[in-house]
Length: 630
Image (cartoon, rainbow, N blue to C red; front, side, top):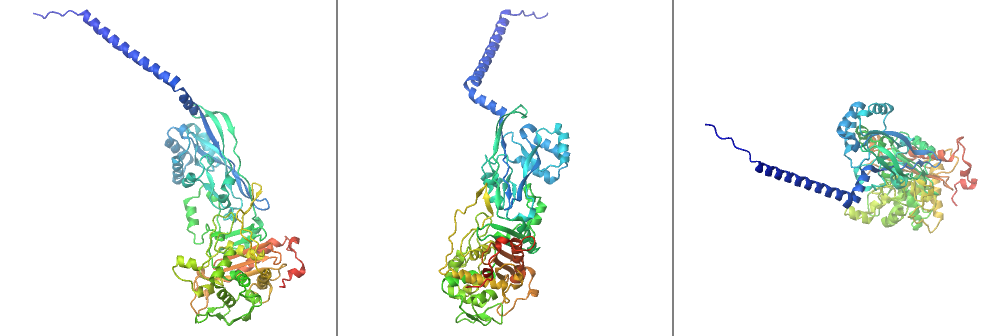
């Protein structure tokens, strides 16, 4: 028998359907209410916030970097300029997958592993939304063409033009003008992020670094409207940038070239000053380097070659080189002796070839071991007699020596606008006690009188000390910049002039320095021979390694880099100086014979015209030019 067929319960099914319909309707109603509530919140309650967000997604502020100020020499020749360059940029918001795009660029331009690494580093740097990231600098015409042909598969990639720094004279002014380079992370944290938006370069050394705020200018901007892909549709507002201020230096291109030619391929430095203003006329540090290598990023191999060179081309010898001044310091010691009454121009000292302290057996040798007999101040300067200045230093004592030499700028920074300058070292009792934990010994005072011992100076300091003798104590602090933005550079912290109790003491030292150049017994008479003007000069030969008591210097037994340094300072015309020159030649051995002719060449380049005749403005009356001391 079959089971009976169940009949449908229509009432029950109808109730089930109705319950389901009610549940669905309730769900739909709930969702509708939620949607309406959300729309109300977005469009009414939170309208202002969302309107701003929407506007920010559509409108972007793009920076316009300012054009960097130019740098000129005193005659209007451009030392630092801006040239157009084309860079490869990527906007990440438009690129989608940046690494895929970068792979395409690598294949298209055949980038080296080092260039690819450079691009990867650039992408990791923080930046504002829709702000392009520079991947490669200074694209060639071929590279630009390849990018344009393949642009359809390079979303977010653009070729942008900008001005980049260029130094037309290359290595000639690398140590004075300096150079700019790309902003690193440490500099980015220090710089004003608003002013430097869109700027990739900052001054690293020299004038470029010291006057960075003035040279940089002020950033501009433009508000642009973009589409959903980030493409610029139109410019809504534009504020142009303010270009950096131009700077005129006191440097003279022709004199700089002449100084480098006179120095030749020898390691050393030249500093030429105007004693009446403090302007730096020439500043040479040899060997040098091409600053253009650093603008867009120097390669690791190139930088390693410069950094590891035994000749240290990156080192600014004129500002940072520390040397024993040797006999170039004797005119300053003479001023100290005269002004304190320790000596007079007529004071004589007997020189048997050495000096001895009372109750001591040690002999401090004169360079002329046979001695010069009785010498007065003029003869002592002319002959560079060590014994005379040993005696003066001993009588002065370290305290008075220190006080006078520091007044001439020795042992401290003297420049207005050269940030890399070293202060040097002017020793004292206190200094030795603090650094060596020892008392000061009389013998250390003795050798300080001839520029040996602990004392260390820079070529710039030697030039300034000599300038003070030339100007009879009028302080004009050295400076590279003559004007910034059309305004003359003024010393905000002027040094006090040096006033002597007897102003004629300046003339006595000046006369002795003239004898060095023009007297038959002068130590640099060969360098002064045939000059159409009077030169006041002083040579110096400073030891690098000590020589034992009783031994003599033998160049053949001394390694080349252990040989004495050759130094020379001078000014001309002697009666009305217009140029001061300080020359340091490392391991040059003889100051008068080696460095003296370099000074003469530089002075000729400044004082003589193209026909080799003395320029009219530097001519002085015959009786004054004779150099006789009253």
